[in-house]
Image 1: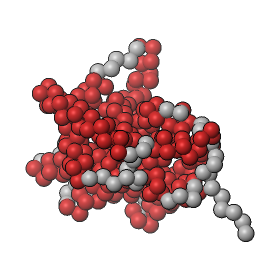
Image 2 (image 1 turned 135 degrees about the horizontal axis):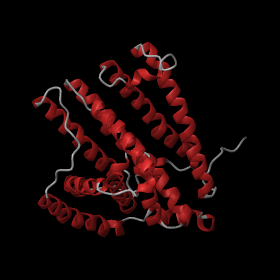
Image 3 (image 1 turned 180 degrees about the vertical axis):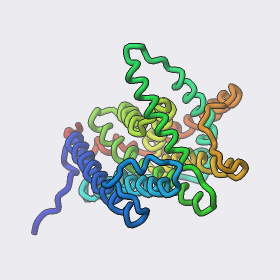
Image 4 (image 1 turned 120 degrees about the vertical axis):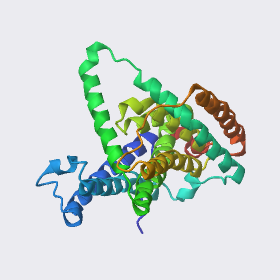
Length: 320
């Protein structure tokens, strides 16, 4: 009888390579499937005219882009993560992702934390946009601004909603799916692997946060997204439960979708601009709530064994 292949005895670097390989292959397959389905579903052929998807004023184009994002998100984040855990070890995924239960008080504290973090996001986004790039890298700055403009226009097109059904679809696409997929991918898988590789959970958390922000390719929102990724990373590290950063991620993204929808109900044909308009009082208030709440999660870390320490105990000298 053949023995089932697992990765549980392999080094972190090798597991990281396998995981990225899974993700790349899965993303390519998902992208191909999505592109092939554009013709029967939306009468758009990427092979005949790749520029068709640049017309963001065409509702059919926006629908096609939403569909592509849906498929690509599933195949980039969810499919490789689940498949990786199927061969990673003989233990169930709940062992790594849901080590400990969370209380109702903890969830309420999380909701308060995410609300308090909103003006902090505005503040750090404002700081990010004020960063001056040396003249030596002027061409890079121009390229970054072009990419930022494209991403901003795409986001506005995706967030344009005219019905409750469209609102629910966008909520799934922008809030629910990324919250589940990205948290399983980044915090649930990449972060523990990097923590093992560098033998330091804090370095692993921040490297993951940097990658998480960079992969969105919105350079003038890099700082707030990185800090938010670090918050999610510590929530997972302290609690041992992927449910907390997933809920936090959903609240952060869902707030933007909900605000955009209700704004458009009052202002048809317009969309809520992503501007940093938090007042100094709101920013100070945000920090006044966020810091004690983060300390609360830190204090409660003693009720759980960190994922890094458990992994260290399991793998012993094979760490890294």
